[in-house]
Image (cartoon, rainbow, N blue to C red; front, side, top):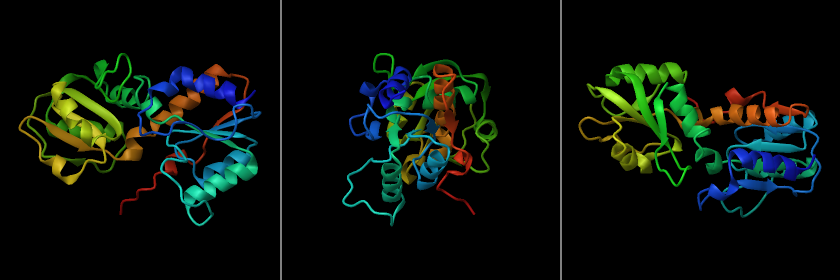
Length: 258
């Protein structure tokens, strides 16, 4: 097996050509011709994930977030990105990211959020011809804002959720977008949603019009399921190949609440 064989499979699920212009999905480290004996799937390519991949004999890592995203002025072991890059290169581990590529397919990040909430008639929020950011659908039964908050906390296993003022309802249509989705609030309203569930919402966006509310569930919490989805896809694609899911995935959220 080669890196190119694995990336071709991932891109059947999340085509590289649909990524956003600002993104850096794809092969961050390594060559398509490098041999692969095992694959480690994670969410962020941390130094700890690289160590685990090396310990398990994996010479390829696939994550959601790109290891190399913004321009780097230096690479050293004094900060996590540089440390992970150095460890991966020294260990001969290729690193690939399916970021907005996995965001923009309905089987990916936002579709998973919609399914977790039990939405019906799920559609793409920003449809670009069969792919696009976000999703929206209808609830099985109308809810009040308070009831919707309880549903969100239950389905995403949350202790806390940031929301605008809960509306009385009825909430029948919900829009979702994994990751930083504040800029898509107008699209959620245009889709007829009374509730928009996303992450990284800024202060001023919590001032919402009557009959509409937003819920910020956290960046990690909104996207982390994509690691399980990618793992399951690769296991089905290569049933007799060594594919592993990072053991510390659920502990990988860098945001802590006290």
